[in-house]
Length: 151
Image (cartoon, rainbow, N blue to C red; front, side):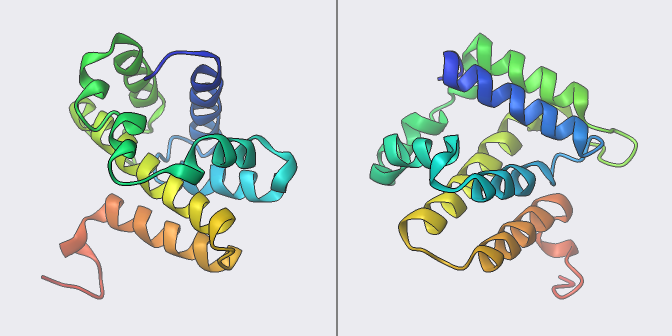
């Protein structure tokens, strides 16, 4: 799941984006999606969509994203998650290392959904980015900590 040329290159892009966003893990999916949208059909994001995501469904996404625990069992995945954790600015984003694999997986699912909406359904670019930003905000602060939902 976590090894191979494409995945290795993508992981490096994720870590680079995390550093560029000064250790904010919640900004990375939006940054990467914007980059994919700017490249259009000539970019790697579109190729990824065409080759992998266009046939994505609830059953085969489990294998693609490692939902069956691969994030915790595969050494390559654990190494990526350790590196990702090491790039997070703990002063502003105090996350525990053991939750990083779960966060990475959730961010991948949300980012992939946004990518599929953009390419498959032709949804509005700004609306997709706005929704992904809101989803990342909810991941960051939690459902009950949202100002509009004071549980």
